[in-house]
Image: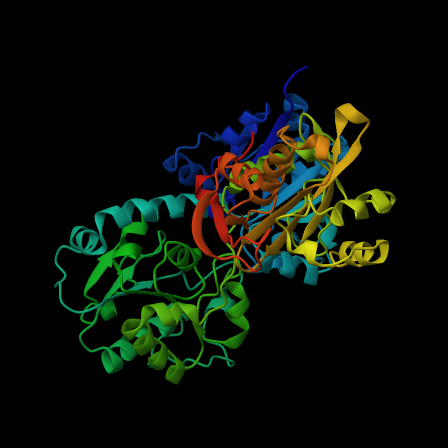
Length: 562
């Protein structure tokens, strides 16, 4: 059977970020990728090791789709009203191929799919794969059914995390000397990220009546006004600090010449990440680089000239970056950030970061190509999917399995020997209440069913997920004694762990057990979990005190399934 062809089209660097590593991930799943790029996305992708086909300006979508016959058409978004992406998706619909849109952030969501129409969803695709919760919320606010949106993470941020680890091995002082060789070693470094004060709607980026920051009064550009406020704040609360600029790639020559006497250094070209890492404080407006700085673990601050721009910054997958919109707040934030960066960044909301995004996006695309629904992403309302292994079906717990046999497991002293469940009597009603407690939560409960035994119910496995922390805890009960020692428990455990990492994008999976529970300890070890700590157990077992052993596995040590 020929490999399905996945047609992908991007024109904007933000959209290009969402396809980094995607062709390789799709190849691992047996799909053939045709990556078409136009505009600035061409050089952007090639500089990052991708090999897109350049889309001719006079491209005829009907001819392209007829030649490729894709199983699914995937586009990235931009604010360009005449992007050829819309013509491709319209032709794909006419040919009966499903369509997917990749969205890298929440800013100007109402302009991403409108084209020349007044309808912000005029070119809405069948599915939206979005980078973060803020983007999901932005499109739901426009009227998109949440059921056709999946939060998948951003492949570019995975690369940023890898870069940060490499830079950390070199050390901040060494990187600072390399990137800013003429800068004195004394005094903190504040790096200001410039943005362009224009766009398709230039008025959005110029001084407006609702600005709460005014700058020095001589400049009307959004970025210039904020830069003046930052320079003045640094001079007042951190006079020993050095302020450097990181220029936007399209910055016109001489744009910031008026500030040359106040700017200690300028960084431009090449990768921006060493400059971010070298800084003691990174300040920007709503550029994606600010999000990348936070992902790298840098101290970051968003300075915005008006309140309504707070939603422009994609915060929710990186931990909320502190934001200020007033002069007094800016002065206080700069002083706090330089004096105590740890507590400064802790003042934001700690949210999970979804790692391994490219494989997750690839699995969602391939599911759509097969005519299936993409896996759930863990956002509410969460519906645990059916999961399979070579020997098992893990089924979201069905009413039909709430039986006396199941209740009997919980009342069997040997089955619950190492569980605190042994201290109470269980009934059909108490078990029903337990099952119903999962409704409306991000947690999951599955019945473990054995394929070779007519799908007999041999136990249960559950998860307790903290979406903000990006952590999921797994618990398992194998009630059928004949299944003990067969490896079925470990098989179920690994499949649920894969769901937590691959589909939900959690950063850590945890578990705990009593020291005497050798079977559970074997499962934890076989699944690659490492012990983190111990503490005294809650109650003795058979009159013997036991320790609770806690273990975890990190997403960075997990290889996504193909």
